[in-house]
Image 1 (cartoon, chains in turn red, yellow):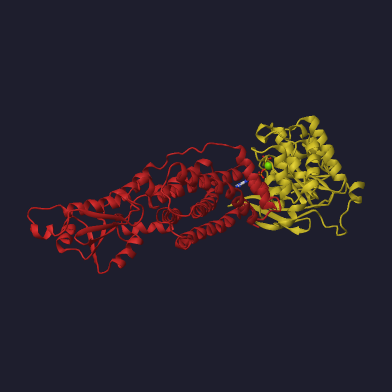
Image 2 (spheres, rainbow over the protein chains, first blue to last red):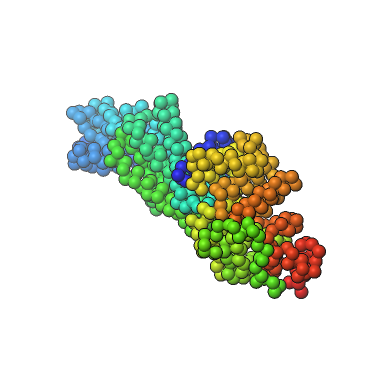
Length: 348
Length: 265
Ligand SMILES: Nc1ncnc2c1ncn2[C@@H]1O[C@H](COP(=O)(O)OP(=O)(O)OP(=O)(O)O)[C@@H](O)[C@H]1O
Ligand SMILES: [Mg+2]
C-alpha cells in the first residue's frame, strides 16, 4: 500500500515535470584517457582458423600478419567460431579456398577478408604451379548476419542498452537526491514507512518508467532505424529492463553520496563513461589484459553482451541467462546497499 | 541552571482531565538526560523533560539553540547520543509510534510538482488512510487550513504561507494523538494564525498533546507550559505565569531575557 503510494507519487511527479535531461560534458579528461587505452594498443590481427590449408597459403597468411591456428576438424573450428573465439575459418572446398566469417563485427570481418585477398594474390616469385592448383575466387560465407551488417548493426544493441542505463540512472539519481535536499525524504521517515518500502516504492515507480522507456527504445531502433535483429524481442526487453533496474538502484544509491544535482552529473564520467568503453562498443582485444578484466565489474558489459547475443546471434533465454543473472545480482546488491544508505536518514 | 527545571505543569485544565489517557497515565513525552552531538559539538545537553498527555507545550529559544534538533530527537529522526527519549510510552526510535504522531518540519517538505490534494493523498496513503475516510480527512484538513480553493494548484505555485498551511494539513491528516510542530505559524498572516491557534486549542481540548516551537511571545503565552532552551540546555520550564513570577518580569519576553542572563553569568 505504501509502496504503491510511493510509486504512484513518482509517476505523478514525472508525468508533470518534463525537465529536459541535459547531457553535460564533464568527462573530457577521463574520456581521453580511456580513448588512449582503447585505441592506442597495437591493432589486433584477426584470429583465423585453418582447416586443411595448402602450405603456401598458410605461410602467406602468417606473413601478412594473420593469427593463424590450425584445426584438425572443421566442426571444432565451427564451435569456436560460434563462441566468438575466432574471426574466420579458412578451408578448402574442392579447388577453391573458402572462408567462413564470424560476421557480428563488420570491421573484424573486413580485415580478415582483406588479409585473405592479399594472401591469395598471385605473386611472381612463388611457383606458379602450386598456386594455380586453386582458383583465385574466394568462397565467402557468414556465421552471423549475411555480410550486410553495418557497424551500426554491430554496436546498435550496445547503444540500446546504454540509453536505458544512462537515462534511468540520471533520472532516478536526481529524483532521489531532490527527495533528500527538499527534506521530503526526512518527512517520509517521520511516517511509519519502512526503509524497505521506500526503496521498493522507488523501484516500482521508476520500474514502470523504465519498462516504457525500454520498449520505446527497442521498438524504435529495430522498427524505425532498422537495426539488425535476429532474436526474440521479449528477450531484448527483458535485458533492457534488467539493465534499467541496475541503473535505478545504482542511481539512487549514489545519490545518497551526492549533495546536489551537479554532483550527480559528476558521477557520469566516473560511473557511466567507463562502462561505455567496456561494453563491447570497441574491440578491447588490443587492450592491456588486466585492464580488460575491469569489464567484469561493469553491469553494462553484461547487458550489452546479452543484447548482442540476442539481436545478432539469436541467442535463446538459456544462452543469455548467465548475463541476466549477473544483472539481477547487481540490482539486488545495490538495492541492499540502498537500504543501508537510508539508515543515514533514520536508524530503524 | 534555574531551579524550577523539575516543575511540572500544574495549570491543568478541565479538558485535559476529561481526555482519554487510556488508563496508564504514561506521559506523552519523557526525556531522561538526552543529549545529542554532531561530531565533537554537543547540540543538546542532558535534557530531561516530561510532557503530559493533553498538554500544549511550547519550546522557546534563540535561533540555533537546538529546538529543531530536540523535536527531531523526539520523533526519532535524530538518535540521542546519550540518555533516552520515550514517546507515547515507546522508547524512540520506534517506527510504529510514528503512526500516532503528526510532524511538521521547520522547512516545508512537500512535492512541488504535485497539487495540494495529491500531496495530501500521498501522505494519507503512507499513514494507511484509504477510501472514503481518506477523502473525508483530506476535505477536512483542507478546510481547516483554508486551502480548499487552492487544492488543485501545484505546490510550486503556492505562496510561502500556503505551503506552511499545507504542511500543517499533512501533520493533522491522520488525526494523531501527538503533534510535533516546528514553527507552525511562520509566514502565516494574523487572521489565519488566529484560526490555526483556535484549532490547536480545540485539539488540545480533545486531549491531543501538542509540542511546538515558536519565536512569537504571545503564542508562548497561550501554551500550558513553556520550556526555555538556550545553547542546547533547558534553562527553565513552567507555565507562563510561573516563569513571570519567578523572574519578576512583566512579560515572557523579559522573563526569557532575565533567565538567559542567569545562565551566562
Ligand atoms: N546536521 C547538523 N550537523 C551539525 N550541526 C547541526 C546540524 N543540524 C543542526 N546543527 C547545529 O545545531 C544547532 C541547533 O540547531 P537547531 O536547528 O536545532 O536550532 P533551532 O533552535 O531550531 O534554530 P532556529 O530557531 O533557527 O530554527 C545549531 O547550532 C546548528 O548549527
Ligand atoms: Mg529550528
